[in-house]
Length: 629
Image (cartoon, rainbow, N blue to C red; front, side, top):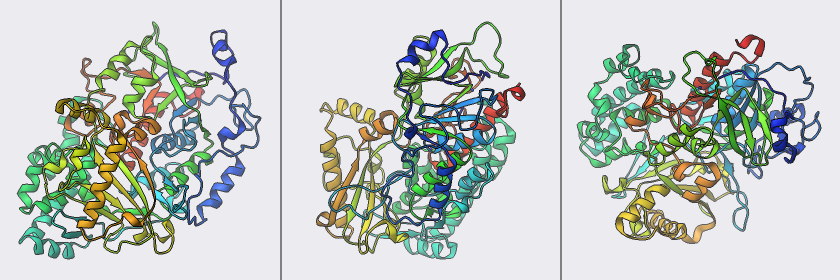
């Protein structure tokens, strides 16, 4: 939950007269800020096979880099005549790591700059310090591995096998739904068992489920081929028969475009079943009332490809992606915040990128320390609205200011308050993945903005991760590490809602306390007991935390929402072919991540990595300047 080049060679650091002032005061990076060496590669390889009971430190902790002096920006053994094109990747999230390893594999000299002390972005496992926290591990970002073949593709693209880096297992049952009336229903992969289970809830629902699932799977297969695996660069893509023809023939176009709630009404009468197969809209920033029916593909993904889990937690994903980057020769600099992407006017001559309408060309980046790094290509992995707002100078590039303003009040996903609870007991009625669904099917989609929105007897939709069901290494014997994602309004939504109600914006402490009480109340009502006394340690992530740590606009954890006006060619950078609608172009500047094309979620971001890498190689060549043009 992507995507514009001019070859420009520079040796870094380059003490030209116009840059000397900015580089002379910068502190050179220390050796500990680098990650890339044969020694590091061996340690990563060994770590692949080591079974870590507790993640006591990040795989991305800085390590001393052998073979080069502190402050050197050239990899060991490289001479001054290196003709490789230089690529800088800003941000070490899934998109940044994936793009870095692919570009390095294609022959680019790649430097990845990460502002935090470790890479991975939101994809991480964490252990916490403090009394009662020892021995517990949490996946604090992604926790459902969907479409595992998209993960495998990232490894095969650089000549590796995913199975050599991590062990994944299918979670069975898929997950358990806990309804507002305190009944439950498990999502099963076995069609016969699932049909019988649904028929017991509503006569005939099992047969209609099979019909719905077949159409939802067709939406997944044809929709991915039409608009996700292929980049969208024109509004005409929506009427391109080669794209939409197979999808329209497989599924009624009205079912694809009308709100999903209407589709659910056609198949199921029981509101619990309607909620069961549409709650996934939460993850794309929508609700069943404004999400087009094509998003049934989300449930189809879970029920047909399955929900998987990397044994040892999602840090295994992060470790593996970093290992690929290490092995491909990517230089990763930690605690290296980028203050600006440097661009300059293209000049009188035409762009060297075919079809480009750019007026600017990228020249590199300036770090917060003042250090300047030059590059032929810059790939930005931070939340795209934040790139336009924070990283591009609005005075020298006024179009960037307009673009930032454009996305300020766009439609964004919810934020979440994340609770990580170390429990001194196991919860036998929880599966690995659990979703708690409110008895108020429609009202529960209104995102809470004040503590009063959590008042009893209101129920709320929330997700609960209980990995001890599958992996006993994530908690001490007899305990469990439970993570709860409680959706709330993003920071912009909260401010608007409070203004409309005429009340002050509440403190996050008050929102956290009210949210915690609502979750514990729901657990108790559902028969899991009063967990208050069993929480030995708690860690919380608030909307402001998401915003500040991971550069997420408004703290909207799933990025820009995925309504029809923010999909495909309409998703930034907008490429409709209509100048008044399109985003500004910068030759050499590309984007990857959840808020650009194709969308959010690790599998989609990895598909975006392939699309943007292919675009870079098409525009700039395969990494060797002499062959690039």
